[in-house]
Amino acid sequence: MKQVPFSVQEEMELIAQELRRHFSPSQLEQLARQTGFVQRKSKYTAQDLVSLCVFLNEDVSITPLTRLCGQLDASHHLSMSAEGLNQRFNSSAVPFLQALFSTLLQEKIMASSSLPCELNSYFDRIRILDSTVFQLPDSYANRYQGSGGSAHTAGMKIQLEYELKAGFFLQVDVCPGKNSDGLYGTQRTKTVEEKDLCIRDLGYFSLGDFKEIEERGAFYVSGLKVNVRVYEKNENMERFKDGKVKKQSVYKEIDI
Image (cartoon, rainbow, N blue to C red; front, top):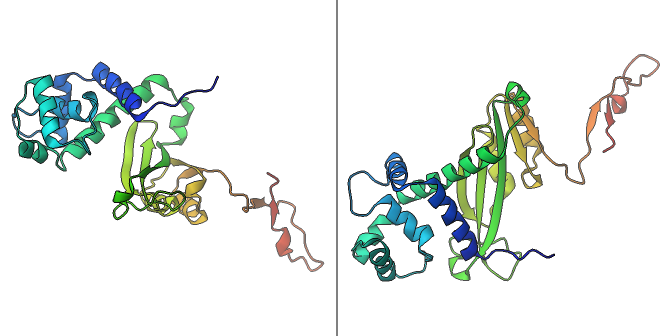
């Protein structure tokens, strides 16, 4: 039976259900204060922002402010001007929403997965790096240029590195769809610490990064590109009659 994909609206409703289940208004307010979104008592609360962005089934990126104000008034009996609401969509709202979904993801993952205790003795952190890319309307092409692989000229890429043992985001970045995974992976390699385990897919494949990860006393797991050969030190090296080692026998290829 073919699975029918969820629409964006259906996916958002599933997220909204999880948020309602895991966060009370007081918890939202506390998280908002921790991230700097709420600094003093105001009639516009953290719950109101979450309602607009998730619960009220509105696309806040294109819906007029006057309509959003009407939704707040109808659902929360909160009267606010369009300009007042516009000022609340500021840079402080971004880390709050990021922390909200990060906390939810952490709870869901930690509740549904468990790592073998043996891993704790080998790795201090397990870093999973991945990206997702999607198309945007062409009007966003000046800021978010696409990869050029489709009829659309605009695209957005989300880069996310997750620490599996502790269950939190190490880094989340939004960038143009054309940006290289490989270059981003090299940037993240600079933050690798001793006894880290880095798990990445082929998009981040870089022999230079692997070498640096090793030099930092860390480890990595990666797939192999089709044109890459792997060798190991040959314990039975061939020698010339004068005793010198034949260079071509120092390493032997591993048949993968």
